Structures are given as structure tokens and as C-alpha cells.
Image (cartoon, rainbow, N blue to C red):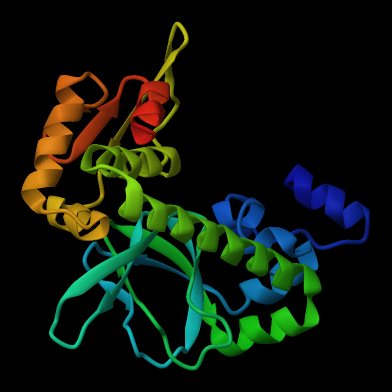
Length: 249
């Protein structure tokens, strides 16, 4: 018998489901507010799904039937105008919560920009648990405030930062959120390597720049030794501290 299960049995408890123990949302997402018993309750109604890049998780204006915890990958949030123009308004990374609680319709389109894995559950199940478990409601509220703070930071970036600072800000944000294995230490420098999930067109859309401007600024950052480009969309950041300074100019 698994030692974790044995300890729980000896204490007269049932352990959390195995699928929850290794889940990023279990400890850092909204599920971190739930007890093992509450996790078991939620787990009976959850489904783990893998979604291909380019697929829509939820469309703007669609009736909300469920929510999800993002376990792997990156999701872009966007609004589409009546004439078809799109504006990316945010990115989500594990263990973010996908969906708008207590809303009848989705106000944004959520699309996978890389292969993603989610843990999804029906709307009625989560909203019932939110009413009965104040800790879960508080954790979701805290996560919503974090997203609000990030949105305000992007308002500052779009309104006041230069093109170079905007591109550096986006690369820095992705580098901090996407798991890139164990960082390689070289003296006091830390190197991170990852696949950039966004196309140049998506980056331009998100940053309010042209595709040409985005390409020029990435080339500039490479020439300055702040980033290194590899085949495909793979980017290496030799020194995260230098990139952080580029974010501020």
C-alpha cells in the first residue's frame, strides 16, 4: 500500500485522488483550497482532456457549461470585433483557471496556442462547491485579482513602453511561466530555454505592434545578447536578470 494512503487510512481518512496529487492546480491553483475529502468530491465529476494547438476551449458569447484548470500549455484570451479584427487581451499558464464563474455567457474567446491539458468540470458542480466552501471561493477571488493586476501591467506596457520594452516584457512573462526543465546555473547567471508559443502575428496583436516591428525588436535583443534564437520558435535567455532589465528599458 502507498505510504500516503497508509497514513490516511490509519488516521481514519481517505486520501486525495492520485490524479490530484501530481497536479499543478492541486497546490498552486484553486484546488489548493480544498481538503482531500472535497477534492474527492470534485474529482468524481472532472475529466482530464488534451487539446491540440489552435483549438478553441470556449468561444466569445458561448453559453458557459463548464470550467477548467489549465495543467499544461498556454491559452490565449481574445476579443473579436464585428468586422473580424482580433485583439489578444491575455495569456494563461498553468495553473490558471479557464472560464468566467457565475456568468451566463463567455465574454472572451479562449484558444490553445500550444498543446494543452486541462482538468474540466461542469459549471453547476463548481458553483455549488463555491457556495459551500468559502476557502475555494477566496482562492478563486485571489487568482482573479492576480489576473487583474497583470491586465493593469499590460495597460502600462501598451501605453508607455517602447517597442523593445514590450517585446522584452512578453518574452520575460513567457520565460517565467513556461516550465523549461531545470535552469542551468553558470556562475551567477541563469539560462532558460523554451518554445515561444505565440507566432509573430500573435505577438504583434498582443503588443499593439506590426509583425515587422516585432521581428526587428527580437533581432535587436538577439544582437544585444539578451536572447538567443534556435530553429523553430525556440528561444534561449542566457541571463534572466538582463532580460528583466530590458523590460524596464
